[in-house]
Image 1 (cartoon, rainbow, N blue to C red):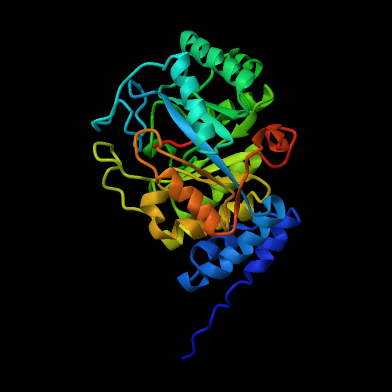
Image 2 (image 1 turned 135 degrees about the vertical axis):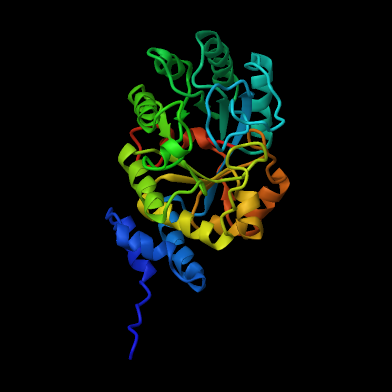
Length: 350
C-alpha cells in the first residue's frame, strides 16, 4: 500500500502573492504553520523578499514607558497588572510630565524612533489624559520622536485630544482571536478593541494593533488574526509571544517553540506585507538564541524593558542589528508611515 507524498509548497510564491497584493489562503497559511522545521530557512528567505521590498534592511526601534502600573480593573489572563493577578508588580498612578519627558530622552539615547506611552486600566480619566497631552506637546516641541499612546478604550473626545496634541500612533491590540476572546478576558469585548483602533484612525492617528501568540488559540485562529489586522488596516503590528508570568491565570501556559515563532512572524509578513511588523513582548524567552532570525521577517523591535518584564540589553539589540548587516532607522519623523494615508505604517501587553 503506497502513501501519497505531499509536495512542499514553493514559499517564494507566497512572497510573490504578497508583493502583488494577493492574500494567501487559509490552506496556504496552515501549510506554512505546519511546515517541517527544515523549511524554516526557505520560509524566512521568502518573507525577507517581502520585507526587503517594502523596508530594505532598515529596522525601526521602539521604546515603551509604563506610565501607569497596576491598579487595573480588567481581568486579562496574560497580564500581571490585572485585578486577578497576584504577581508582585509595582503599582503607581500616571507619571508626571517630567518623568514622561525623561523617558522620551532615554528613547532617543537608545536610538528609538518611536516612544510608546502605555498605561494600565480600561481607559484614561480626563485628568490622566491631561497629563499625557501636556507631556506629548512638549516632546513634540523639543524632540524628534514619533509618539505612540496606548491608554485603553477611549471615550468620546479623547482621541481628538490626543491627535491634536501630536500623538502619531494609537495602539490597542486585538490580542487574540474573536473565538478565543472570552477565555482571555470578560471585562471588555473584542469589538470594543477593534472600534477603539478605528476611532483613533478616524482622528488621524496611525492605527497600531497586534496579537499575543501562545494563549490557547488554534492555528486557524492565528491566521484569522492576521486577516483581521489586514481588514482593520493596522499600520503597525506588534507580534507578542506570551511570557507566562507567575501569579497570572496563564502562568502555566507553555512557551512558543522558537522555530514555530519564526513561522508565525513570516505568516504575518505574508498577510500584511507592507506594514510595520514588530517582534514584541516575549521575544527573548520564546525565540531565545534565534532572535536575530526574526529580523528577516519583521522590520521593527522594542528596545529595553517591557511593562513588567525585562527585555534584552539595548547594546545587544544594536549589535544584533549591526551583525546582520541591517541598519537602524533614525529619521523616524521623515518616514511617511506616520501618516494614516500611507500603506506602510500595548504596544505590548506583558
